Length: 371
Image 1 (cartoon, rainbow, N blue to C red):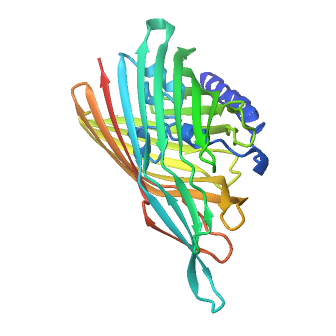
Image 2: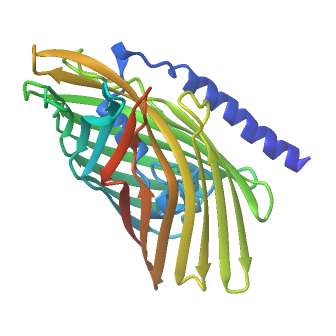
Image 3: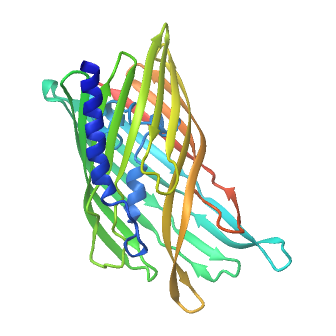
């Protein structure tokens, strides 16, 4: 009976979260995603990136902030966590067949190097649960899209920051719930080099249910938001709501701690999105991680055509897919983590070839301390 009750609780949360998420799942060119949308999806640490981005059922302590806030409730003592993600300069060449049926370069994507810094602090308050505060900042380099004649250009810089307050609590038996609240400020630059500021809020709601000594499941509704407020209505302001479901398996075998996570992200509008990863720690001192992820997302880009100073909107599917690797080292109460993850690159359209010649992977470094 207890097992049925636990499953029913998780299923109820899943359907409620799915309902509110699907309400805003339709995207149109007139209401494209804001620049801060991707920023909110990238606020993970090296622990989760090393496991292929699997976090829904495995999130814990300060690393659960911005992922599945239910995991914050596992914090036993105060904990700081600092994450730094580095996106290298990426250059991708696009080729199409010419009149002689030979492929030749006709365009190029270039993304300047940029990074995200995040600081999380989780502090338990006894039987009242656990609170956490967070600060995240992104300074993104200019993005350029040019054809073989250098006639098309999109070169807009931006930065985003978020201030967050989170809360996690253990309720009933073996059930964790949590909520993230984020205030977002986004600054983007248009083609006339005019800066625009937008503000808004986003919320994450999560639950983790322990089904047995080794298995737990999690559900999280992420980035529930009404969008950002820009004074210029032509600036994209939409935040995409998402839902993720995960299963985690954890065992202790002699001096080895094993953890396996598997996540899915319905409703798969732009392709299947999954994460799977494994983590192994030896005597709680040295850890290794390996994972595999497959994420797809539709992006809309306004391209300035220099020939006649007009704009066109390009729609293209971008994909990150491949193996992820991570390492962890623990010295007393301090933990260092590093992760190596595939970068998002554009996918091909009809009769097209794409070759990423630089910047195929990103790197994340984290440091955490309990006290």
